[in-house]
Length: 416
Ligand code: SF4
Image (tube, rainbow, N blue to C red; front, side, top):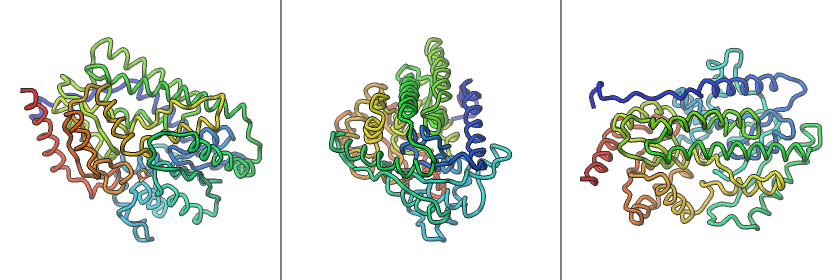
């Protein structure tokens, strides 16, 4: 495709407000880290953030930091630092990039937010293995290195239904965290505050769902690549008023785009589903590659993972257990396939891209025949691209481009 044909990427005006609230979040976190009074908890991205927030902790999410290392393309040179202390290049490149950054004493926060040098030192590390075991290994390393307690939830895996037995199990594990957290925070859990926090998370997640579902319109007003950026508040600020207010603003803008028939991609011809992790260091290139082919990658499992319809302020702990058990990544292939099939229909999808991320097997669903089974049942073709979330040594730009171009041609031929 020639330069003249290259469609323009459309800027979302709400981005400015998102950057403002993210900046406030990071400066507040930094202040908490420097304060003698406020306590800092590190939490996995789908860990019990509501509980921590309700107990007054400032909450840092190392996966968010690791994704920033990926997006700024710092990760690839930092990963070997973690390899030298025994963490294989084949395991989670969020883990290896983040530990590598710590060992090297560097952080993308320093460049983005003058005055911040690094993530704040934790008073406690809280994990949930609902996504993978790597998060526990990751936090355990920091626990030893920084001599801080590491507690968490060991989640069941590969189930199809979220049964009462599973919810009971995880609820009890969440309750068991409370005494330790009370001791560290120095105050008892205020159940009313927890209810309010869960209610805010519910509101945030509902708005985030509505934001993502605007992409069911044709043309879709936002892409997966936009979503990876705008999901920031849903990850690090769920349970706060700021996140709720932000998603109202973003939703209004996207609804206006729908009313004006403005697509995120000019002359949208093909509608694509992205399954798996983003390649953080290639977001812009991939966004431009697909837009240049008039293909809108408009929905993904990844961004939808922060939709938690089960939060309920009347049953805060039990509903947190249910919500975090409902996560796509922790479910059986049977559940995942049904979920993907529903999404293909709802968003009128022409083709699926599966990203086989070298260091994240849990979020790479192309390895056990799923693309073939889904295609057999839906007739919707797919392409598997090899890469990684953070380690760009696993990414072949040329091969990705060639394969994506051939895939879009294949979609075109199917219409003839
Ligand atoms: S789900 Fe994948 S990317 Fe996320 S922490 Fe686990 S291994 Fe890393």
